[in-house]
Length: 436
Ligand code: HEM
Image 1 (cartoon, rainbow, N blue to C red):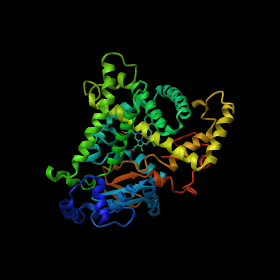
Image 2 (cartoon, rainbow, N blue to C red):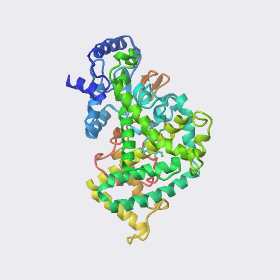
Image 3 (cartoon, rainbow, N blue to C red):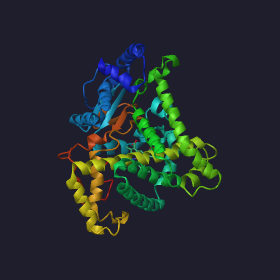
Image 4 (cartoon, rainbow, N blue to C red):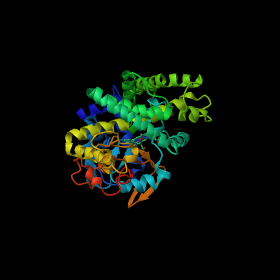
């Protein structure tokens, strides 16, 4: 019962939940008995409880922090390259190997690119406007616009900005070493800000903290509520939809936080004083939804990229500090590799053109992404047509979840150790090789 309590209080979704539990049990039982599960043939997975399946195990592991969540995800490898979690009325197929991710998410992307209905994280918290969780028809235009930003000749200019910001970061480490984690955030937001909005980041630390809090809350809201796993709860009369106020307040605060960052930028654009940028020159000049006055679409898209692009990279830099403390040998090796190219006297800093020669740095980045993936589970992809795959039958509506933490512990010798040398195989500078 303590676990049941945890579920509802942890999710903040159902304050006084007892009556809802009774209704949940009844309706879900009907779903199990009459539903479409009779035709399915799914990979094995851990035994769960009636009705809720593995939901409480998953939420309990998640609540226990990365050590317990990581253990839970890694353990699913014992069922094979795919394992099934019964998440309330949903089936999650955890993809635990690089091979099945390629087969299902890449090779069959026409039927596995949709997102499930997520009334809390996508709806209430994001006003249906955050690109990461949007349904395909609403997402296509944003995706097209993003490709314009993240490909082509401008990528070279982004590299130059990164080098400038890196020099500032090194100075900040020396000036205020105790604030290293704040420097990481300023560095990653600064780069993303410049790439997306074309301006130098000039905001107090408190604004940066708010922005980080917003990103973190959004991530935690994904799959964080009973409304995601029992969609019929969303059809209850509003007075029975307990706990929604918590998410509504969060969504309002996110909106206000985004406005606080967006409005000054928009005013500068309106005055003709903003420097050239993708947002000013491309996004805001598009036909609706992004241009033509639909200010909020442009705001959510532009700042979602800043948020997605800065927070994962910040976490990876933090993991790098952790690796340097826990595995000083690997850190010293990285330092030697850099000094071999730029010299021990530090008369110049390494730049991006040196990367091909300092292969140990690429190997270190790959090892960090394996060892402490910033996104340990990727938001679910929804299957839109029935799928026969390697002896299994997945009905439309099944959800596939890429599990980088499990992938990074499968077929790796001594997987919990941080060892960049495991990537020194001649393809280390191809960052896509061997990783998700
Ligand atoms: C360590 C670095 C990073 C990691 C681990 C990471 C990871 C991810 C993951 C797992 C997803 C979801 C993919 C899916 O659903 O299949 C995602 C989406 C996204 N990422 Fe990253 N990311 C990183 C860096 C960046 C950077 C630097 C940018 C931009 C400058 C960026 C922008 C985005 C955007 C815009 C999306 C949403 C795409 C969409 O709407 O489909 N990310 N990222």
